[in-house]
Image 1: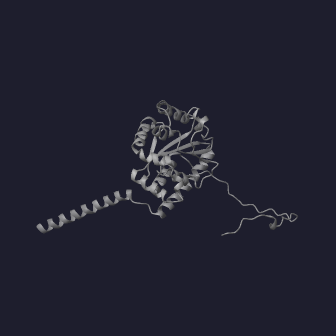
Image 2: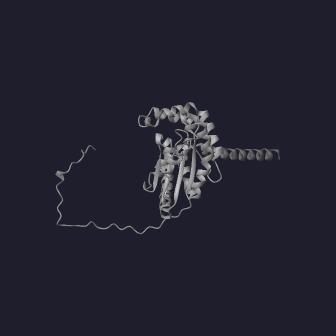
Image 3: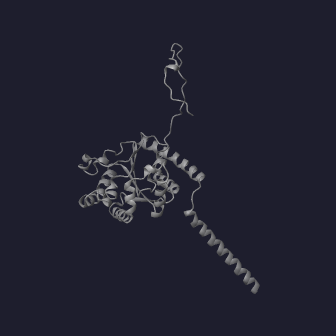
Length: 289
């Protein structure tokens, strides 16, 4: 009897160990890297759906704005590239404004952004937006206290106006850890192909990590509203961030595949009376490759 109890006890312990192992494996999946093959296969599937969404936006005359905000090197630009990679630039536009001119500084703050709002059948991706005032302008002292607080009070009302007018507004904040940001900065510094991504402003933002954290938290407390919420993208893993963000965009806009008429390629018209000029009269680039 004692032998049976001992055997039963060992079996229970083994089952418990197996369950713990399974739980640990499931938890580890969250932090594991996606393989390149899996990432690329999923990206292709999502990009195909983005094309369908694009055609639906054009077909229905929708006006869509997607805002991408976050710390420097958080992966916003890479995600935007994957979104637009297979889309029609006449339907999907990227807006990435530079430093405001002297004239723009004298305008109503939101005015320079209003000029880039979508018309019917357009999707506009803002690579940073009017939230510059709550972020870099606030931390680096590029705006006054009065301008900053006026923005926080005005922004929810401005966005509500856009939404009431029929615009679909989606806001993403890309969240990255200080260690991962440092790794990406070093990677850019050491890569001649990426050094252009590093600016003096990036270095200044690195030294003001806590100030930017406080600015982001204050911004959320005023502008993360029920009508226009912020969606946080965990961006320490670039591949997962891209896939998760694209998947979420697709879930935010109900769409259907727009039927297309069959495309039949017509034959080339022939005109035996027309003689083309000789190729020797044209200037060709050298065939280096």
